[in-house]
Length: 139
Ligand SMILES: [Zn+2]
Image 1 (cartoon, rainbow, N blue to C red):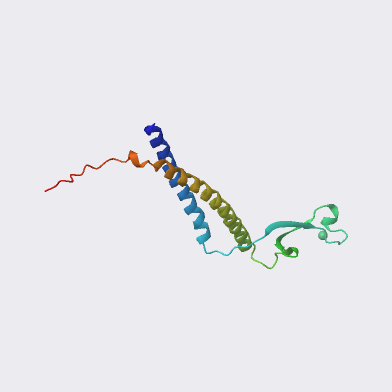
Image 2 (image 1 turned 180 degrees about the vertical axis):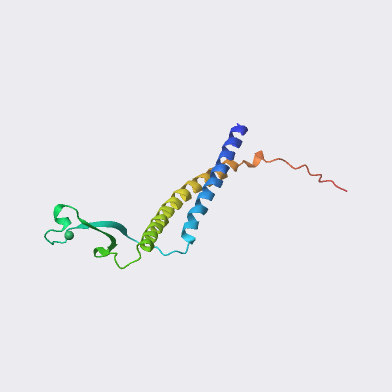
């Protein structure tokens, strides 16, 4: 019985350490300093309308564009004037932050469960504690 308890306790301790490591990694994502960009990059394909242009034959013009959700709907921006790499990095980093936040929440729930289980395994009855022999008639 005690060995089962010890094994369960040991497994829980390992899980707690792993969850703690995962949480630290997730927090590190928040501690970075690069700017975050909320939104999505996509490729806009369109026809310019000039007769005889290749787009009239189905080869559409492709340009990078950006979409951002706002309170009033979504905002679309052509990226011709912006540094595309910087926007792309910002978008990727923002997605990573969101994923890290979700991971952190999952880890935190799992961690609370494991910590509670560990504490429960450590609970003893008062009678189970060892008795200290005391010499009450010491000279
Ligand atoms: Zn065209």
